Image 1 (cartoon, helix red, strand yellow):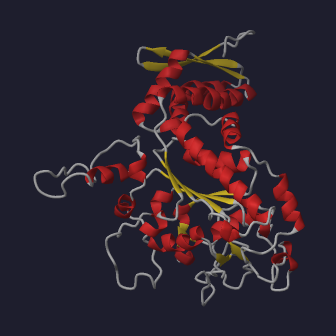
Image 2: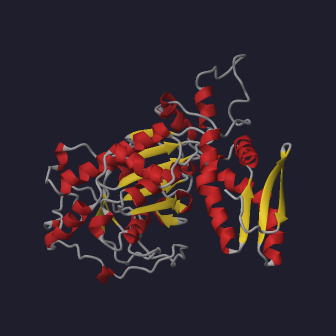
Image 3: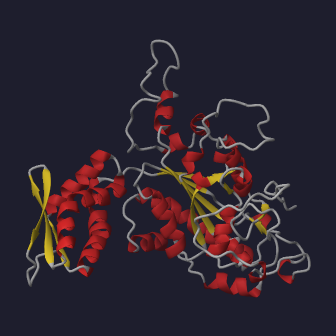
Length: 427
């Protein structure tokens, strides 16, 4: 039996809500008609078991179907560095997702004979490559409809902010309005840890029957989508109740959630100590702690830690795999600096007639600073921009060809301008 979620309907229309999503609204006529008599759904509007159309079968058959090893190689070709264990786990899950779709829609294997879809939760410190991995994998390597959404703007049924069902609306845009492609796409939910409820230990009056913005409301809405439900999906971004809302099943949509979960480490450590008395360490929770922490598999598999953090245990239980990410080491950060960061900066300056020379000692110090600041790969660009600021201000102001040189003096990095040589020693 198909479950249909109708909690997204309001009794009265609200004022239209402006959204920063840069796309035109879909007209209902632009979508494939899905109704009780539509041949493509076998008379079951929004049913996950609706027979696929020939066009959809042809599209799915033409999609890349790489092995897990080929997926890893594809990620490396697109510039993803480090996280060998995490990449292996995610690549395997992605391959099984594609294999499951092919069995369902190409081979005609009954849904009940196959395992359900896999939802992934990627946990690790900021700048370790969680979101970049999900986006690169599904959008570039596998080429299936993909959307990445910051969950902090959402609330239960759009009470304040966006309705959770518009997650699928964004996937609908990524699928160019094709409902069949939408139902097999991938939704990457970033900043997932920000859904943690600050009142996770309190059972307030009316909980479960009223809308709230504490985090529990969004978690309850996501629970149904992760598990697999047929939901009415708005075709544009507003709170209008009478807009077109085709039914879309989420049984085959892959959800990949990413979050730093700052403070989860202290919770796991505190659970192993005395809660009161002389054995208690008051500095564990709420005190200062390292950001770039490493989680072992046992820590991320203990649902009690997530409940203490502010999540519904049943929501965490909807993740087939919780993948821990480690802080990036010095060698990996150095490779990212060379292959990703410096390459882009050099191209930008080249277009302005400016040459960039970076000594090896400078690159090593930039990496060391990023590690000390515990900002990961994101910190590389910030540290480099800081050291280039004065020289680039002068170079762009002079509007003449020049060479920007970054050199190391002890534990400091100095930038200076020099006349452009005909044959540059730039790497």
